[in-house]
Length: 161
Length: 158
Image (cartoon, rainbow over all chains, first blue to last red; front, side):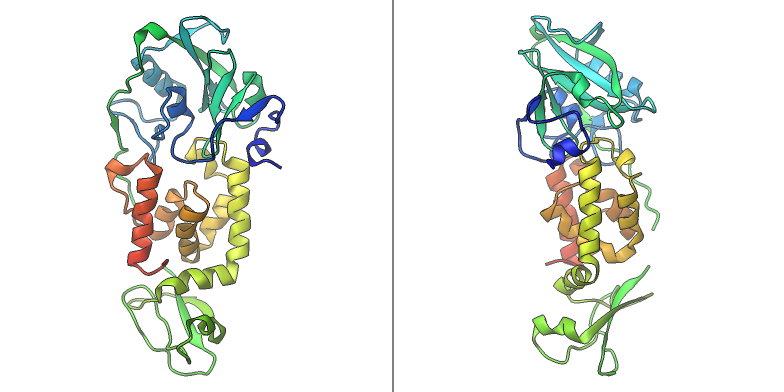
């Protein structure tokens, strides 16, 4: 079984396609803003903007995306002139994934430390692990390239041998 | 913490050979490839000893490498698509790897090269250390390099 499809059982080779090699170098949040160099997540092992809430909450993710020009919108329909993303929350309401819409109307997702894929529908990755789409956001292409705010490593870790 | 100690079957007095952390006995022959045949792996609380570098990884692979690989493969297969490391750490396979204790450290370090994944929380948890510089967090290659150097410095991996 393809590793990509074991945790996301609705995906198959007919409704999605691999678009990169497997790599832990970047994650879905970075990929949603076209960055494939760094992992963005509000935890101890990833980067997150300076001064932003470093908690795994939808509010923290909204803060990030609003800061770079995204605004909430009604749905994931294709709108010329806008880049759209979809924020997923899992069954506990915690952020689980971010997907980005392509110019074709399809979606691209970086799957954790695995590869990134193109998929026709967001529903293909909904389920126990990713949950469902909680928020759609859009950003005008006229805003220019996305500039992330200054990123910062997490605070010092407390080591408990 | 537990550290690996190697005893000769011949009953000779173990010879302390190294720096803090591990104890090893003198091998009966100079052939590195045959040394493993003469030792049992046991675990004690050690104070001021050391194990030879590649040996820690080799012995770990020999003793529970298959089990570790099965757990690591299961963890990546079933959680690799999940971005939240906190959530991934709740998986039973991850918890079982951590339960291996210090014995898993050489294997985890080796995994950073052979099966890249976010093993950093487990390494911190098992070693009580964190060699990653704050500026390097979020950059997998730099984080892995820091841990690999840490392992080499302690002769846990080659």
